[in-house]
Length: 226
Image (cartoon, helix red, strand yellow):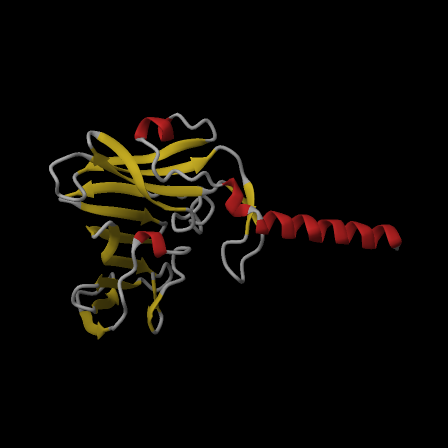
């Protein structure tokens, strides 16, 4: 009995220690240049995109990095403690012809095992017309986020959620517009032409990329999360 109690105590302290020290495994890339980040031996580039984010005529970069090692992570209050390969998104702006990291988020990018029925989830990353786009393609749904550079921050301006129920064929499409403060929500069935449209108003301050926590934890309005 004494051995069992000691074992349980040890496991408890081990798990607590892992959960408290998760942040310590993340390097601080802020201020580093592109070459230094690309040559970090502990992290590999999962996605890379370039374009002019701050409209100064110079090429900027967005990177999604994945750790080569797994750690124990508890990704939400009701989630189990699981082994994951952490992911980081980093934004680099061209400063005097050197790309330097100015934004880093360690939580927002979904992990490889967070794709539901997908065996491995990998985000899509792009910079188009000065906008940063992050997209996820799931088995029967997709989720996208669009950010715009504003006063040293990447601020969300729109998002889109699409999903189809496998058994019924019912679908829902939500388009979030943070400049208008509204969601255009369309519902219907893939076997029918009729589509019902509802405009849902919301009053919530747009988040910057640095402020985002885990995906789908930000409540916009009732039953609408990003």
